[in-house]
Image 1 (cartoon, helix red, strand yellow):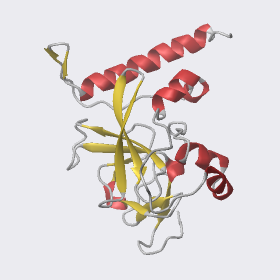
Image 2 (tube, rainbow, N blue to C red):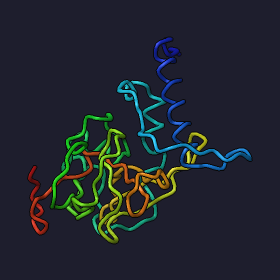
Image 3 (tube, one colour):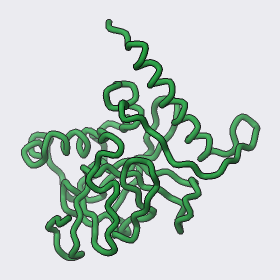
Image 4 (cartoon, rainbow, N blue to C red):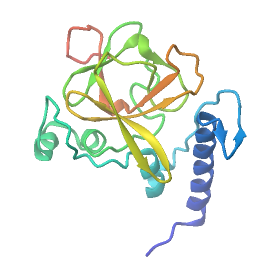
Length: 208
C-alpha cells in the first residue's frame, strides 16, 4: 500500500479544514455554542482532484442506481455512447470537475436557459445565476420541477445532491443558509460539464 506523500497530506489537511469551516458557517448551532460569522466564499485547492480522498469529499457518495423512474432512462452503455468520458464520469458516476475550470463558472448572460447535458431538459434560467466565488456555477433557483434533491450521506456529514429530474443526471449539490443575499438563500453548486446554455429559451441547441 502506498501512503500519500507529506505535501499531499498537508494539502488534504488544509482543504478539509476549509470544508469544516464552511460546514460550521452553515450550521450555526454546534456543540452547544452559537457560531456566527459573515459570509465567506468557498476556497478549494486546485490540487484537490489529484487526491482520491478529496475527490470523494467533493463528489457524491450516493450510488447512481436507485428506484427513481426517470422519463429518460438508459443503460450505462447507451450513456457512454452518447456522452464524452468526462460527461459520463460526472453525470452518470457523480464525479466533480476541477474548481475554476468549468465553461460556465464565470458565465453571466442576461437571458437564456441552462439545460441538462444528458437530455436537454431546461434546468436553470440566466437570471438564477450568481457569483458565489466557489469555483463552480452557482444558481439560487431552478426551473420549477426540473431539479430533484437527494440526501447524500458520507464522510461524517450530510449533504444534499441535486439531479436532473428528467434523466437523473448528477448536477452537483445544494447548500442553504450561506447568506449570499439571494431571494431563497440557496446555492445550487453545479458542474459546468452537467449543463449546456441556449440563448433562445425554446431552442435546445447550445450556444455560448
